[in-house]
Image (cartoon, one colour):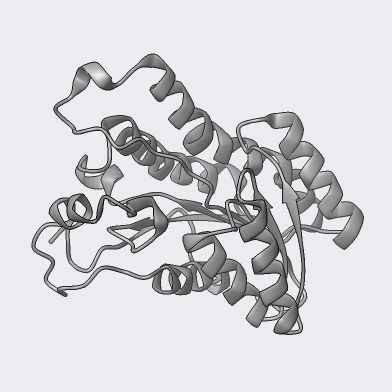
Length: 246
């Protein structure tokens, strides 16, 4: 997909990977919708940066786990831009819980993480699919994690949610073909605010990395751009982990 003049929604776009992706999309000429839930100031900062680039963007507050809010966001996108060509399902949450501390993993934590990380991505996908089907084209990228491959991450519910996303990506790729392509990214450790105050844990979880580095949000965003523009790619999860899983 040529990104020039295409409309792309990026969820959780105020910070980290979402922010980097939104800026790269704008630099390619895409019209970007900056979704946020709590990071309003960060979202507005991204809008300002995009406009400095001469790009088009607007922000919209919506909790991706709330179907009514998601549907309202999608309706606003159609009202303003008339179409939706791409969706980057980036919004995710976690809980920092040692893997062997089973007693701290409450029902509420399970529900919160799965409602955002899995059901939220499905809800956003369901909302945009009718418009993509109507125009017979579209691309959806889901944010997974290497935790969903190895089982090692910030918590067991988080790792389980990301594994579910990887399988859901395959299911959606089959269900929505040939008009819509669906892929996923599974980053290893990435230097974002998620690990602020937990940097030691990040490096311990990453282990002995062959490339001896932690990924940046920009590097993950580059892979998202590739998945969006490679027309022969669907149902794939790219592991970007500096060799962590070797």
